[in-house]
Image: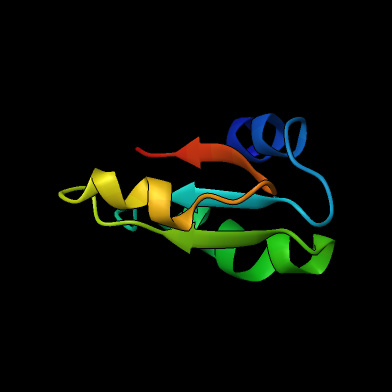
Length: 68
């Protein structure tokens, strides 16, 4: 979990967004759900079978696409 959180926090900052697939390791999911909001970082989820939806979700604040 330390590797995942360190890698992500080296890329995003307050006000940024992450787009992720929802099928995540439990620790990653809890990090996204519980910790990132404390840093004002939001996560949006896209169905892995509908990756064309990424373009609809992405904004100028989207800094990371994450999947496992």
